[in-house]
Amino acid sequence: MEKIKKEGLLVMALLFVITAIIMIKPLNDLDEVWNYNFAKNISEGNLPYKDFSIIITPLVPIISSVFLNIFGNELLVMRGLAVILCTAIIYIVYKILERLKVNKKLNYTFIIGLICIFLPHFRIDYNFFVLLNILIIMYIELKDGSKDKALLANIKKDIGLGILAGICICSKQTTGLVVALMLLVYKLVYITNIKEFKLFIKKMFFRAIGVAIPLLVLLGYFISNNIMNDFIDYCILGINTFSNSIPYTDLILKSNLIVKILAVIVPVFLVSSIVIYIKKKCKKEELEYNLLTIIPFALASMIVAFPISDEIHFLVGALPSMISLVYGINILARKIKSEKNKKFLKDILRCCNILMSTSGLITACLMLCECIITARNYTQTNHFKYIIQTETMANSIKTVNEYRESQDKKVYILDATSAIYTIPLDQYTKNYDMFVVGNFGKDGEDGIIEDLKTKEDCIILIKNENHERNWQNPEKVREYIIENMEKIGEVDVFDIYEN
Image (cartoon, rainbow, N blue to C red; front, top):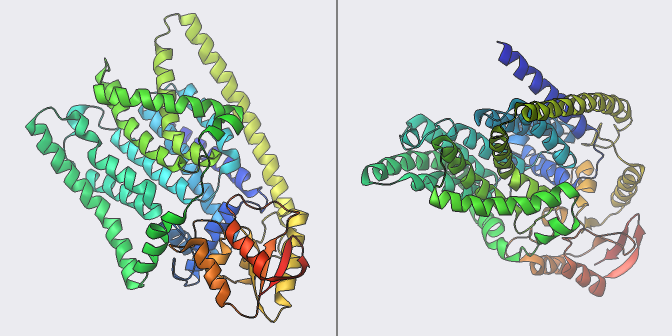
């Protein structure tokens, strides 16, 4: 009962702090806006790929759309889901470290540090949802605790784990496929004879059944809505047009100090872990089992950091590896023989935890109070009610949308920020409202140019040279507009072109 009370307090504290972090954010996170727009479209009866552009499997927006239909079609509802999702991730990390018998004080220190590292990035996002499922799989797998139990088939458990991996595929096909593959084959390392191989095949069979269940449901959704070809166009053939990339070296050269350190440590750890995985050179069976369970999913998770190795993709991908690092630190700390040194470390961790948790809760309280007071002033923008906006952003939405509504012609905003303007007007123009390279299907930018050639009597808005464009902006399309259309004016941050 005492443990339940403590964990209840922990969950409440996490909810409180993460709520403050997410709700105080101003309207400027494009990933958040795009994910909301996916869910908004589905909630209004539009179909992914056919009616709006999306390049991942659509489970997360489908789930989110259900909540939008129940609680209201507002970005605020998505933020509520983000609070639950991000709290669940931090909590399952705590439970994994607890299962690994990591010192409780070190465990608390790590999750507090984790909140600080992820602070700018908490949001509703399919990568976070996939991460949560990976962590749950790890937590369940770590329960076996030994090789003998690891190869024994448990039908309910194995099918359940397969379903979780299948859910990963239905949320983001690239990462999900690697996670599912790892779940199916990673126990090969335990096989030493034909009997163990038979046990492995039986276990893999039930896991494969589990993986197939959500995939069959998704396939049924595609077939019943006649969007299979559209899915292939955007999510498979369209990959060839995805030229966006950020080199991994940027993490080391351009990120903050903590990310720089992690960007060096994590690959070194993963390489050494692969050696351990292959050779199984651990003196203790429990240690060997834990490492051989964590390593495959740490590797699978890191797939998300490529080819776009920016801070958020790296942190999401590296989290299972960070768990392993904390586990290693805990093992090393146990080897300290001096009781005086052990007590010193525990006292340091205790003081850090008290200081950081107290200051965090006080800051969260102040942030929530500020949010409640300030957010009441932002109720005029449809679907963005109670979302804080900078004066510049609020004025831009108002000015641009007033211009759009005053025109008799169709107005297209060819910019990454397009959804910020179209959402309040309940409009969607498919490829033009997530206007970034790689999101246009198999024909890519050439397809957009051909489509523009067919549009008559329309107005095109593109970001003018005085304002920074998104790094994924389709420059080929922009050049076509400048060279082949007539500029007729400006509105806010956009140049106006007429076809």
